[in-house]
Length: 436
Image (cartoon, rainbow, N blue to C red; front, top):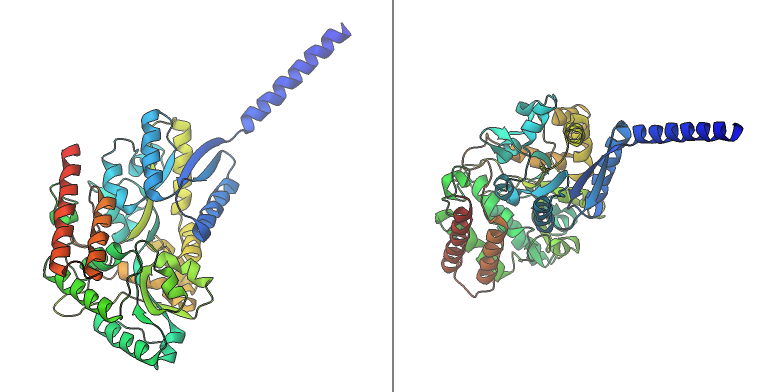
């Protein structure tokens, strides 16, 4: 009897332990992201902070490679029945995600779980980029805008005022000549992300459309407009400067970073997300708004880059509750202010910007306000709210391939831009045929 009683006690204790373990188990939320280096470390810290803030859910962040690889893998995983809960997708993948049939719209997710988000407090240029039929379909996460970085020591060595960076493209040319003639640097400027900076943002910054149909927001029957008068003028000047050595094309993506970091050039328009790395670079640097050509072109707002967080279909309501709680945490003004300080990405809400202002953050680090001021320079219009194009990654590759041919002297500016438009329009037609 004693042995039987002992067995019963042991069984009861085992069940109690098992029950306690089950009760304490957290619901796992899988989050695929694509930021590396210092930015990736900041993502992991954000996730760790959320996990420590509550005891119901455990977000597990997985680095899944470059944006295009991660997006393709996520859609394939959805079709196979095992998608992640959250996927970070870059802005050029917006149209693909909207039409994929694989996503749970963020505005609907939050409403379904009774979480109140003040969507009107989101920065206009950020919010408008990711809305569909006046609703937000993905949660803005790492939004950036290109700004002009410059090397203050090179400016001083060339006899330029380190506290007065160029405001116009004419001044960029003037400053570059002085820098090169003084021997302070080999080139005047280079650029990161050529299509995004030199054509997509330059058209918006000058109040002009990059593509028809409201830059693709109003329909799939879209054509590029970059071979118009402005595009021809702007790229012609870049080609002239490249031949002269004022401008140096350093490659696609962020391949040109080393040219600036090594002191071979004095200026570089690049994503504001570079600020986190610039803080660690040891350079004496500054940042200012993108240069503008002036009259007859108006100055409008710049457009964003970066990525948003998309919620994938195929999970339980309990899991979606955790997803909603995590996205609520990400959108909190306090978290946005912290994220901005660590990365250089813009805070996505006006409330977060107000916190930073009240703390005196922008007085201490004024360059971190540049992208915010650019995005808020004017209310977004159909020409400046962003780009909604299918096959956008391939289109960027086409544009940059044609720019490379122009800068190498293999094509005239007119031939290169016309070919970029012709080839891109074919990609747009192919995308439309899939979804119309």
